[in-house]
Length: 116
Image (cartoon, rainbow, N blue to C red):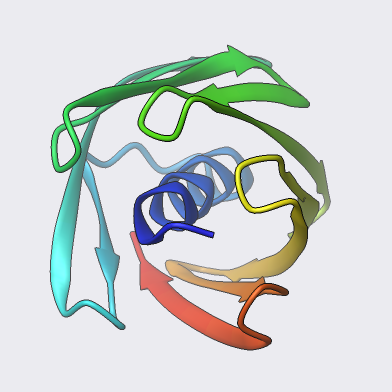
């Protein structure tokens, strides 16, 4: 999965699970803040990824990453989330613990850390 898609998934999951609104998510693997703006209203997502210059939007569980032109299925259950990235054709999963977000990307079989 692309790093941008992964960061947007982490951002959406983190915001919904914690209820914390931020204008960025910190990507520990890339050592940088990924600036994201927009709204999350219930299951409606309307975000703009300033890093990639594209929208990440839709109604949960069906989202679209305009940066890759692919759909993303994102399901949230408690402090855990999972789904499918149609761009890579693979699953992902993760969890949120306070401001810390972990995303397991099945494409590369490893965890990625983010913070709100």
